Length: 186
Length: 352
Image (cartoon, rainbow over all chains, first blue to last red):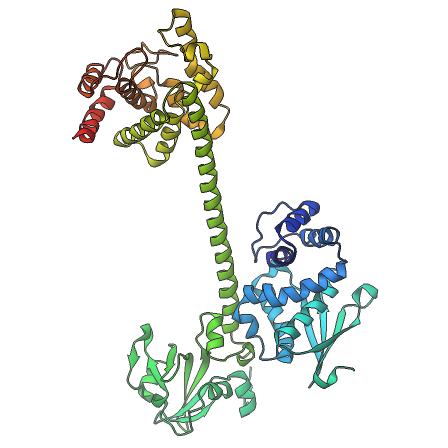
């Protein structure tokens, strides 16, 4: 996993719960890295360890943490890390979601060792789109759910995000239906 | 092998080249790409291209007009145009098309960072997929991010190093102050000899990094006296022969105390060797001449100067001229002649 992810977990914890909690999480996870470099690759075990320790130290469920982390990733970390490149990925929610696969393709081309996930779009309708998430890393679909929620917030667009396929229940990948405007079911 | 002809329709062509423009033989606009049209809504078919863009030669020198002949001669180069009304800069490959005579410019905006995208109201979708501009922006953005992080880490590290150095020095000053109090010395003694030693060491050509150790060594010169009993250390009268034997062990005590402390090991020369004498009659090891570390040879001069300048329970301070005479006289005996040679004008300057 690339360092920006771990940095993001660090920021999320320190901003919302303070430095002491972050140090406690690091200690519990056995992580001794002093500072993460965004584009460096770190073992996935570090990220999973940090998330696991966070559930214990903060007394929150893994799903709660991963969802919050997904939103935080978009609204804070990626915004700062990618700067105007992120907001230039689309003028609105559907444009951004449509560009997400290419964004990750570019990251994969530039930093092949980071092994970023792959996204695909299908069933593009005026008020909804289906997003497909492929990753060799297990257990992160809730994070991706939070990520889509963060993107909708970034564009001030109320959206309904529903996971429709689950890799951890046997599907070959995770699938999400993102609806906005009239497509939101009442 | 027969090559196929490509006959793209306008929509297909525009999708591949959203920033293109097509000129006639008079350099007037015939067509523009959809995104370029959005960025420059004032361009109309039939407009002279120079009304909207300034052409730049290589090395970004502006040129008043381009002509068909010029274009045909420069087909192998990059054509750079800057909008006359905004910061938009475009780089193109030009093609000369015959029958009818046309000049086609294919390319995209020249953008160096993602904030320029925003300023030009461009989004990544505006670029053709094959255009490497967006890849370039990704690389620039991520590289800049790494550079910022490394810069911050470097600053944090420098700050932590300074804080550590300050903490070291504050600790040393605390030790020295404790010793001065016990030894009935004024706190000024250690400060004075340290300042003068560093000044003389600089004149002797020691480097800034060496001076840090000289400074610490000078501050700690008598730290070994911690191991000498109050009875001896605070005795108002002269010491007996046995008491001198004990007192003369203080450089060895200093060595034993400081040698295990890594950051003080380079500062040991003065505490361990400042009672050695140039002629080999000093203690604890009777080192002679240049076998005595330079810092200790320098400090020996300063220590004697400061001791003789101060009142003692058993004598008054010597007059300055008498001290100077004594030091001159001890050159080559007690003191390194080179250190005396530089010390005398240094003190003459201070007294001028």
